[in-house]
Amino acid sequence: MSKRIVINSLAFARDAGSLQGELPIASLTRLLDKLVDSAGSLSYRAEGRLGPRNRPQLLLQLDGVLSVCCQRCLEGIGYPIAVRSVLEFVDDEEDLTQEELEDDSKDFLPAQSELDVVALIEDEIILDLPSAPRHESCALPDTGQGTGKISPFSVLQGLKGKA
Image (cartoon, rainbow, N blue to C red; front, side, top):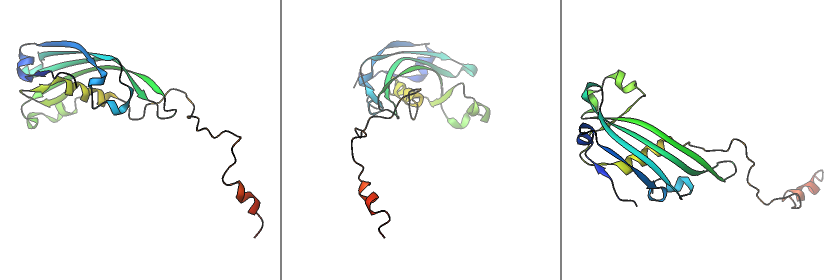
């Protein structure tokens, strides 16, 4: 597990804080069961700011490549991650208007005095991953049952018509 990166969401946004760095893919433990290979790293950048109506926001950028498993051929696929998220912190979700809730340009999170940035990055990656990744074109995996094998149902061929 990588070192935790914890921020106070309101103070980070108010002070226009900025974080950036590289996260080893192997340290993102909630992703490992979805990956074929955990080598490499992802770059991240988090910037705090005040958005419309002076609401605290976090701009999150993630870049890198993950090796996910093709659901057809079971081989690895290099899946590019290019996440750009605007996360707005709110004290109470009930203060949001219906129009704000329907706005897909940003997501809302409860304001936290201890926000784990690595966990937030993992959440954003999980949301970005396809549910069933596949190559554009690939063959089914070879099951080792070539034409030289005898079908277990070939015995039934001899019973046909002997009723």
